[in-house]
Amino acid sequence: MKNKEKIFFNSAYYRKLNAVTRVDTQSVLRIDETLDTVAETRWCSTLILALGYLKVEVAEDSVLDTSWTAQI
Image (cartoon, rainbow, N blue to C red; front, side, top):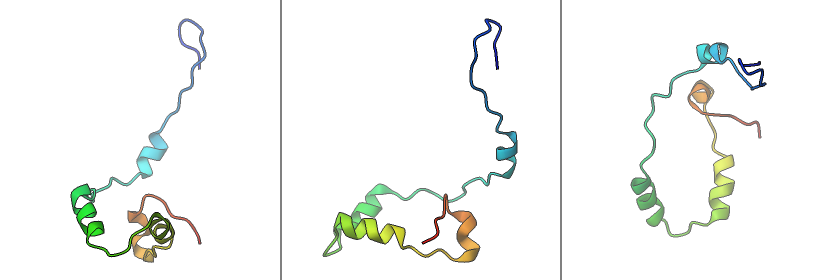
C-alpha cells in the first residue's frame, strides 16, 4: 500500500485470523513455583528438559488448548 507521501509500507489485515483465534483463559505458570519444583528434583539437566519438552503427549480434546502442536 502507499500512504499520502506515496511511500510503500506493509499492511496486514488480521480480521479473519482474529475471528478464529481463541482467547487464552489459562494462567501463566509462576516462575517461583516452577523453580521450587525443579530445585526439589535430584537430577535435572538441560538435555533431560530439552528431550522431555518435545515428548509431552497431549490428549486429542486438549489440542485446542495448546499454543502449537507438532507431529513426532
